[in-house]
Image (cartoon, rainbow, N blue to C red; front, side):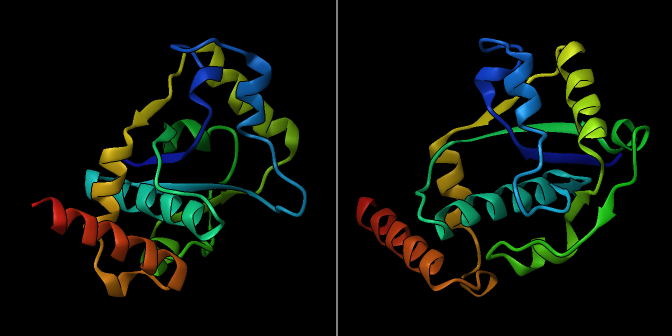
Length: 165
């Protein structure tokens, strides 16, 4: 079975302090975007690669290693509303970009319909802890990352891990 994953705001969804408006905001296009970025996976290894790509993207744009809140949806559920288009991602992990990245190049109404349906069905968001994210990133092959910023962050994390042992 195929699934799609994207980052989401845990507190907006059931299990937090549910807010339909904030949940819908997780599925809105930002200025300049032509489609909503999602990642398709079929197993845990692909899910971890997609999550690592999103974590690396956060680091690339000045963020730090931190927890990840994400929502997973069956591809079948999403495809009932519209087409899922394979597009190259723009994270520091080329393999994830080429193999797993997709976009929902839909109208804002269709994206809102998806978010509203998920919210009404009490769909929840999963949180991956900071330590789990750190492990995912530290375990990446250095050659898999094409960003000097991310490579430097990961090298520093590997050094810290070595010193702890």
